[in-house]
Image 1 (tube, rainbow, N blue to C red):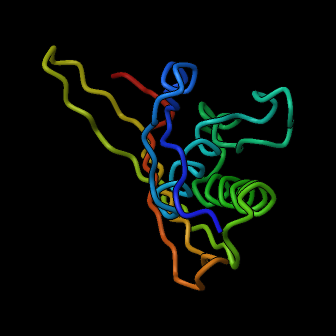
Image 2: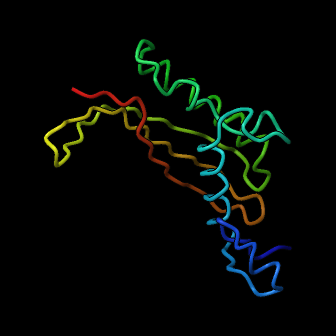
Length: 143
């Protein structure tokens, strides 16, 4: 049974020099993998066109309703995490989208959509509950 995993980003220079590289526990490894899935777009990884999620396909979609965007993101993440993250079972994804005004120092205000993603599941190895939170800003708009 594997008890430690490599930290992302991977220190390849340490591996080449045959040095010990940073390792993390199971839960943090899964959190890192989910982050990798959510920050990748479909087709980005040439070895697997299904790796990634649809957030980046709808980044500038200002016409679709918030509920439709939530469903598209949640469905794509459930599908992608279920098929690629084999250490979790009973995966559920909740997505919340809110508009947020960001004030900057140069007196230019920006409105962006903030996407909060909560991934819940059960660790197959230990049957413990698992949860992680990802937050992103999409759809830049200046005024």
